[in-house]
Amino acid sequence: MAMTTKSMVLVQPRAVFLLLIMACCIAAPVLADTQYLGGSPNLTAYIPGLNEFTAGSDITIPVVLENTGLNQYEQVDPSVIAPDDLPNTAKFVTVGLSAGDAPLVIKSDPQMVGDMPGQATETVDFSATVNASALGGTYMLPVEINYSTLAFVDEDTFVSTAKNHYQQYNVTLMVPFVIKAEVIPQVVSAVPDNLVAGEDGYVNITLKNIGSLDGAKATVNLVQAGESPIAPVDSGVYIGDFPVGSTVTCPFKVSVDSTAIAKSYPFGVVVNYQNDEGDFVDSQTVTAGVAVGSKVDFAIISPTVTMSPGSKGTIQVEYKNTGESTIKSGWARLDDVIPFTSLNDVVYIGDIAPGQSVVATYQISVASDASTKHYGIDSEIRYTDVLNDTYVSDPMVVSIDVENLTGAIGILSNIYYLTILVAAFVALIFATLRFRKKRR
Image 1: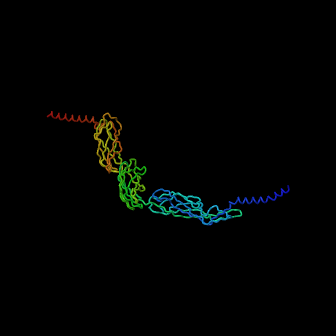
Image 2: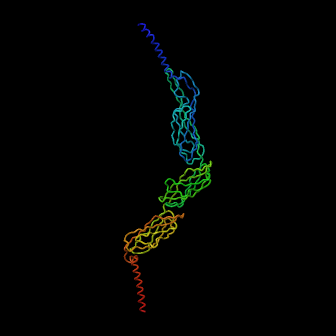
Image 3: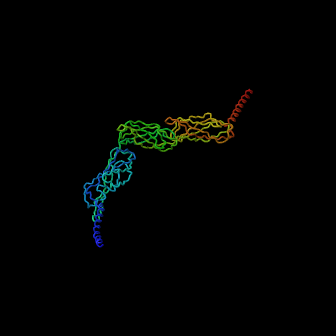
């Protein structure tokens, strides 16, 4: 029994030793046998694909970032603790894009990419707008990259710990950015010709090619801008060659909606041309404005006419051109409505300039059973504009009061009284002549 107890005492230290060895073996993966002594990130950037953009466009610029850095020297040592990061890893990468001298506006802020180990590739998209007047050519855009790399490691092999130290870098790479050469039209002037609401007129547009490409076999087209009341009537004007820096004037016939008021309204211009590759393409649409005059309109400025039931007479109606353009070959018309009858319902009034007035004379009669009250008779003017297009004005109202007139005015204005008076006058003359004859 004693021997058994002693054996047990002798065996315990050996077991402890074996346990320590096993623990070391289990903990062995914490110790690395490989360490890289050289290497660093090598970052490059470029814009993939065709990389050709158009002036005046909203675009997305994809910037491809690549890390081609290698780890150069490798050390195998079981007693060295392996670092968490490799020397060629770029950590905490942030990428920003600037316009530099290029004619565009970068709208996106710098973006976080994260860690990029060796041979990694990342694509970062940036929103931008190319200036409408940007000339074609190749421009260099700065790509600003911020990142950190592993600098060195403080090791404590006694307690198997290591502290990593990082160094921060800020580099700028230049990437080529291509703006396509093209025709860029600029509206130098837009002169209206009889451009008033509700009628057709002309816009004389002078264009200049401020782009970087000579356009061939060019046609200038006018397009309606949104809900603008100006709409093109002509489909387009052919101008042929349109070299850089040249100007050309094109007359366009347009129609103006009757709802337009006196102010400037927008229109669009686009040039279709043949480029260097022989393809027919459209330029960007440029918008300009042109002044529109108020609608051709008239007003009756003569006073209210007074007549009596059964009367017939001459009335004078004065019309005034309250618009902003001259009308030609005007004809005024008066409607026949009960209880009135017009003997000459159409009167020629000729040309009327803005602010000018003319008088039309009508012969009308009033029915004998007409009620005594205020009446309104519609009247309108038919005319032509300077383009010889025919229009009809909005209806106007001629005011007539029908009253029972008394005295000489009542008798003279009433056709029946006037007829009796004339008959009596004729009879009186006849009787007088007969009496004189008998005396002789």
